[in-house]
Amino acid sequence: MIDFGFSISKSSHIQMDNVDLKLFNKLEALNPDISTCMACGLCTATCSAGNFTDASFRKIILMLQRGKDKEALEKVKKCMMCGKCILVCSRGINTRNILLSITRIYNEEDK
Amino acid sequence: MIVEGKQKIWADYQKDIPDDHYYYVRSCIRQSFFPASEVTFLDITRNKLGKDFYENPYHTTCGGIAYHSDSIPQETAMTIIARQFALMHESGYENYVCSCITSFGCYTETLETWHEFPELEDRIRQYLWDSCKKEFAKPKYLAHSSDIIYKFRHEIAKQAKYKLVNVKTGKPLKVVEHIGCHYSKMFPSKGFGGAEYPHVLVGMVEAWGGEVVDYPERRHCCGFGFRQYLIQANRGYSVSNTHKKFESMEPYEPDLIITNCPGCPYFLDRWQYVIAEQTGKTYSKNGYGIPALTYEEVAGLVLGYNPWDLGLQIHQVAIEPLLEKMGVEYDPKAKYKGINNKDLGTPENPINIKLI
Image (cartoon, rainbow over all chains, first blue to last red; front, side, top):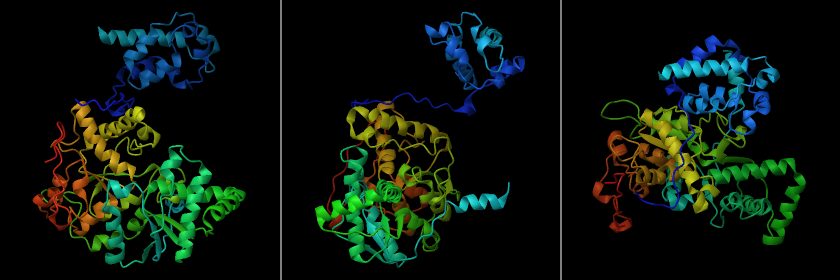
């Protein structure tokens, strides 16, 4: 390989035709309120774990919708289940329950 | 769908192009990147279509490269452009046609800025008078040269010797059309079809028998981006953009890329070599890559020009597989022969992308 003094960065392109949304659809069927999320970010702003880690409910949902399951599950691990996000959610989404469902559904798939 | 509504929206993105008498300005970088494209354009429009195109030997660069790389301020670029308009006025023409998309963007931006800020136009008039003792008149009509070929695409199709069709299978060639960003992304109403559905190259491809490929990153930039390329440390941004496009178009197996900008064919062509040498990957099954041509080169091929007179040997990606598909007659031994059979030398063979 020739060294040109610069290199190709990894693309952030997501080919949605290749994304398998089976698990996300299952998650959405169990928690229909997930579709009412408008990504306002109130949950992230108030997140206790988010102050010290990259935990972000909004990003987790977006990543799952785009097939980035592994990255999303890494973020879920940072959640402390304090439930502050439920109190501030402008759409009244049961965010903690959704995070628990994610852990269950996506980890079951691994087994 | 309400057809009338659709037609009304579409009508906003149409341009009336004058039938004849154009003032033509060349591109500073196209003449070195694709030296035969502009000559071919003038030959097609003057001799095949019988149009009046005038060139003033005193015209210069539009200043676009320096402007977009932050080397000169906008007022300087505008004064250079004002001088170009003055030369057109002195030559007795009103329809200004430029060969370069960067120039087209700069001319459009200048005219729109003068429209919004007339006091700036007055200042530029003064600058031009102080520096060159010239006075300018704004063009009555501004077009990019691809607009002219688009307008006369059906006339070219009538005179065509070859079609964008695979002679072995009889199927249309799959063509990726790539429009320069400055054609209609900045001022959508100035380009055929606006920013989202630019039709200028689609119209040519379809008129000449090809089939347009619609792929996810179709409207993504080629990667030139001026400072992204001009500063060596930033070139990773440039090649990453191009890489993203090729990854996106690869599953559609395109036979050809047609472009209307100076930078796009250059980077879509040359970066294929860099990508191949960095990743070992080429974007065609035969290992040659996908030829990236200017619209003048494609028009020339369709009209039966000698591929080596069109300068197709200057491209990094070998053109022969495309010529075979189209059934174009050519002499392989003459590829690296210049005027009067002068030997141009044979390029070294790259490691990962086939050339010969």
